[in-house]
Image 1 (cartoon, rainbow over the protein chains, first blue to last red):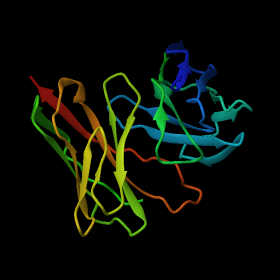
Image 2: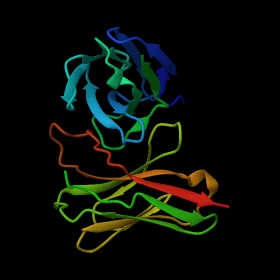
Image 3: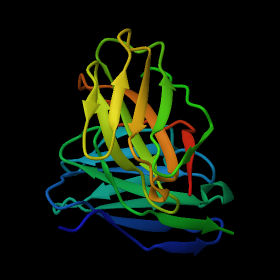
Length: 112
Length: 114
């Protein structure tokens, strides 16, 4: 039974570029949440997708967008990258919107 | 969601019980206490949650005070692999638009020594 998988593992981008991160939820889960974790900080909620719609959103600008596919996998897109977007991006899945979430290993994004 | 306060760091000897405190004095009646941990270079891992009764599972025990203003996560026999950042999160299970929106603080860095 595969857990939450994320790709790529690491990514280096230049300021102003765009990036797409991918997440496959744990088998049987239909809800995906995305978090950003800066170095030394706790994860910060970006948004959550359920039934292919953005259900709720944290305090992040519109440069951060996402998508959920019919197979429940999800993408996180970040446009016009800033140096401050450098962080670990975590995907978590759950059965319906729920507080008990299973996290993937994350994608480490470095913006230079 | 109620604010939580945790000590920034704690130490524990291997094989001993690790007791991690969390203060949540503004917790309301429909808010649960959730615990997650994050081992270095991994995503957070759900541990346990509770409302007012003590809870136990294969990973840990959760003790919530009678007034619900504080709680303690207990790892009964800590191992080196329990070294991690432990997060206490207070959140409502009443549904609504914030369901599943976890708010992580700074957590407690637990270091288990040989």
